[in-house]
Amino acid sequence: MISQKNAPQPRVSVYASGEQSMMDASQARRQRFFLPILKLFVRSGITPNLLTGLSLLCGIGFCFTFGQSWEGARLVALGLLFLHVLLDGIDGPLARFMGTAGNRGSFTDTTADQLVVAFTTITLIHFDVVHATVGGLYLLFYTLVVVFAMIRSSLAIPYSWLVRPRFVVYAWIPIDVYFLPGTLNYLLWLCVLPLAWKSITGFYKIRKQL
Image (cartoon, rainbow, N blue to C red; front, side, top):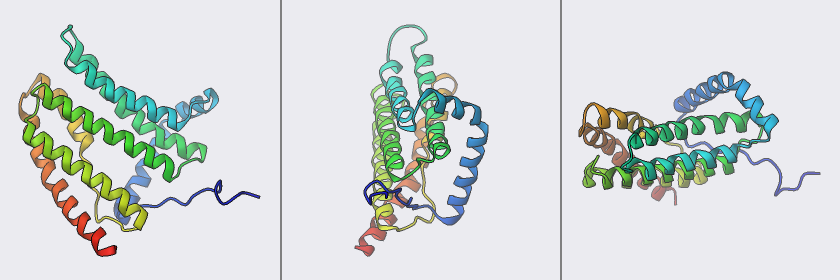
């Protein structure tokens, strides 16, 4: 008999039905694409939590490498950021492949992702890649959206659409560094607007439910 504590916990979704359908389809495609790698990970004893941890380390590695003075440091940093994104895209499919996907893994993954968002944004501000004002607002509202999403998850209050532009920002960093310096500021301003709106509406939705 399975105890209530160890019984599989139902997953809670805060996504709109359309977004959830798109995410489910994307996750199914990723699982098919990475299937040989997933099987190798299972045989090697690699767990989703381990991939999440490695993804976090790669993201933080970007921060410690980006400002180094040795030749090729920023290229290595961008490579680490790419590995962070890649591993972040595999841990979920691995969890579903192993049948261990649930709220605990989702919470761990979300926390790790937000830590990387925070560290990378602070790093970009520190090295004058982005202005402190827009970088600070981006980080503030991104954090609020994530925190409110967790609260809404526990209260079962779905979003209309959940805004998470971190991958777009990550993809634009090499463009800013090597081709169009200063343009990341404009992109972050474009991200701040919907993040601020989702933060405000998220606050009032939660407040209304309490």
